[in-house]
Image 1 (cartoon, rainbow, N blue to C red):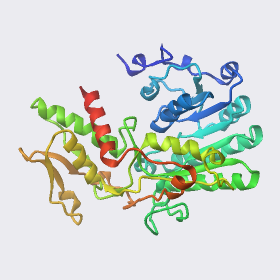
Image 2 (spheres, rainbow, N blue to C red):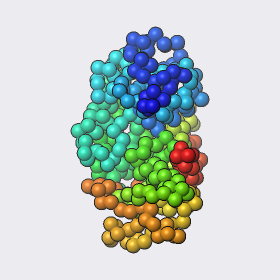
Image 3 (spheres, rainbow, N blue to C red):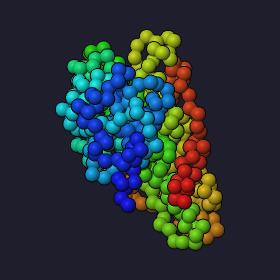
Image 4 (tube, rainbow, N blue to C red):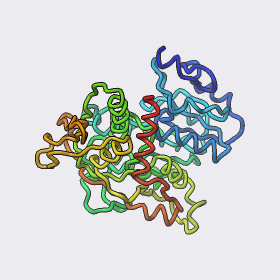
Length: 384
């Protein structure tokens, strides 16, 4: 059975007929404040919908593109009349304008993006059109038709890029090293321009690496956890398996649970409520404050799966020779493939979220090992 026939939404099969156009969306307005969330089929967007349904009485419209093949796994579980899918394409300025003009949202939360850093070198123009020019269209539409709307634009630690100091806080200069990072940095400048020029409530948080069970499989964290589950199953059944291939395993990142960050985003959108000393709208860093390498993620993941392994030829000077092997059999579990190297690597990103903790009362609840455990165990269950 094809993927789109398996998926349901409000108890019905998901197809384009379930995705409202602007006129149909207007008919669903019930007088409650409206929130538009883009990227709802992704990790952050779907988690934000869950958060809003649990913590507010708002009416939520999730923006999705019309597609012939659906990938709505992250929202299959939602069965609430306050949530509706609406036809929305970030690259269509007319669609953005009509949606904002007709729905008059109280909040516009933009998680939609070309969010894979590695692909941004292959599709630099598409990355900028999706991640930056669309933000200009969103801001201009809100300025014209819903000036009191509060805007959240998803930012990234990749904006810091070639870091000047560690840990990185809100005062760190923007020094991106990828088209993705540059697109997010450009969007940030637009957010600031519209905030300063038109007194709009517009913020862009610096969200350091945040992962979870809804993370796309093209991201390294989910790629690792999914392949560990596949390898574990093959070992148990005495079957052959494909070696997991990775790029720079020595890259150091600040990993957090995406679910923790959603609460932080909402606090950024309501700063006067959470900050008793609130004076002006600010952008904030959200991070764990812990540094771990990709190789540590690999080690911890295999340990959780009950597979004892070790790195051999673990020398950063000749990374292509490095391998992670199973202790008992010496079978190669992980090896390095140069095709996954980036043209310009960001070696270290470590966030300082002190301001968000002290001023907004935000805090993380899940540590690195618990995050890896959560992801690996979830993929093991899915494989079964």
